[in-house]
Image 1 (cartoon, rainbow, N blue to C red):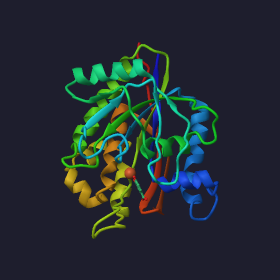
Image 2: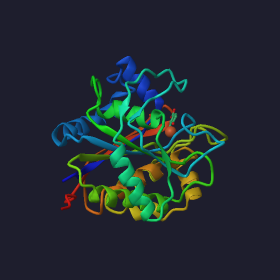
Image 3: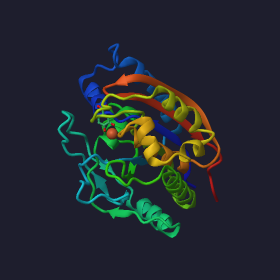
Image 4: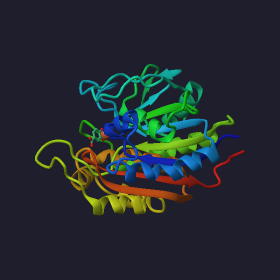
Length: 284
Ligand code: DHB
Ligand code: FE
């Protein structure tokens, strides 16, 4: 039977993609961030997932302000990246898992969510940078992709509690899937950052530490916040942490924290990675 093996949580700053493309991961500026991926690579080589369900936010590549779904789920056979103007492009296509996507869609709709379903979808750095971080230098992606996109861009945003509930509904759907895949869940974006306005450059180490410390054992502590409180605490782009909360929800209650890394700054952002292993997720 299929199994949720665990969750990987990471910042998706485009400059990380540039650093990978330039091969400068060991330069002093980058090393403390990339070092956080050594235990994640070890874990991936042991657990060998074949599907990645990725909770992320689109930044204007697939959805723009004229049409902004709160939640959208990809159901395509393949996803491509398009040049966003960050100087990183040419990524190989991402194979989809449309049957699993439709199963997730059916199950979350039955659970009371109303996602937009996307049989065509381009994915931006919210997906591509985490894939480059997790599976660097591969000729072909070892995992199929199910992208789940959360609006963190145009208010009103979904509440943190709603994102946690969506993640839990996705986790329930995965546990009911009768395939044989090993599934890894990704949550991308965050941690604290604000790219524009009078608070541009804002980083909140204390709040980031609270998120990193509570995500494994007590995600409700973060979910109890109002969305606008998180904007105030983490910055207007730091609110991307709600993607992490959704991914955490999909893992089930019992998780083991295997690795955590935090480094300030990466570009304008508090860079972080976190690895949680799921427990007892095999269902008959
Ligand atoms: C940066 C961070 C992001 O999350 C993003 O989507 C784009 C840029 C940054 O810090 O440069
Ligand atoms: Fe972002």
